[in-house]
Image (cartoon, protein in one colour):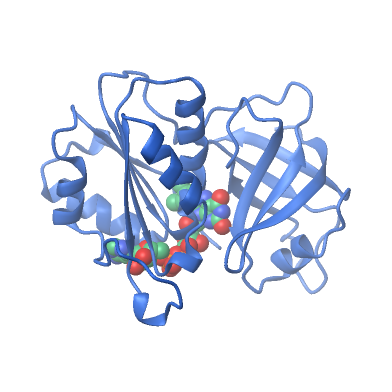
Amino acid sequence: MASVSTRLLARQEVAQGTLAFHLAKPAGFDFKPGQAFEILLPAAPAGSSGQDAGHAFSIVSAPHEHDLVFATRMRDSAYKRALGALEIGAPLEIDGPFGSLTLHRKAERAGVLIAGGIGITPFISMIRHAVHSRSPQALALVYSNRRPEDTAFLAELQAHARALPHFTLHATMTDMAHSSHTWDGATDMVDAAFVQRATQGLPAPIYYVSGPPELVQAMRQTLAQAGVDEDDVRSEEFFGY
Ligand SMILES: Cc1cc2nc3c(=O)[nH]c(=O)nc-3n(C[C@H](O)[C@H](O)[C@H](O)COP(=O)(O)OP(=O)(O)OC[C@H]3O[C@@H](n4cnc5c(N)ncnc54)[C@H](O)[C@@H]3O)c2cc1C
């Protein structure tokens, strides 16, 4: 895959310790909602082995949007320190797009998106695309975070849920004991009963799972036990965040 050049346009906090990076979209760069790309820094970060110059991220923005956007928790790694220190206007290289975590075409089948934490990123692109294209497809988003302050894009998702008859949001905060915000929604862990409540009445759902490896594994197991065909459960492995 040949890489293409871009530059950093802006950086914005989308949750506590979580930044979204806006990049200039190179001419002809096409992707599908849910796909990812690799972002290569201009130089290998100081203190890294030299193999840490690139990192894969889901694309947050939808294809119709002007900028390319990705988001990540700013953990303390050599790559993320270097990413966070980039000046606005800094050059970057993009490899991609790649990945097959894209929404199925049969609009008569519902899409159930199950996200943990910053694993929400590929689903934001799908949901923005559905809003933009006025898709008639039923979509349910199950979104688990520890606390409201950790929950990226929450206000946007709540607004879509109010505006779109085909889209439902089922957010839960699993660690409110450590939150300084208020939350009057669900606080339970996502499990079989939670998913069943969120998906009741949806036509022939196909499930997409994105988030911490433990959540992805638990959801695969839960859905298999509920009798969901494994072809109807889609996720991708993303490690090293
Ligand atoms: C397809 C895919 C795309 C991704 N794209 C990106 C990206 O673009 N950018 C990025 O930074 N990261 C991405 N990730 C990485 C992924 O989301 C990380 O693992 C994430 O950083 C986890 O940390 P967190 O702090 O967000 O989650 P946490 O705060 O650790 O967890 C989020 C929620 O999951 C719940 N949870 C954890 N385990 C379970 C379980 N077993 N059962 C039920 N609930 C559970 C927690 O209670 C919590 O509410 C992606 C992962 C996948 C699979």
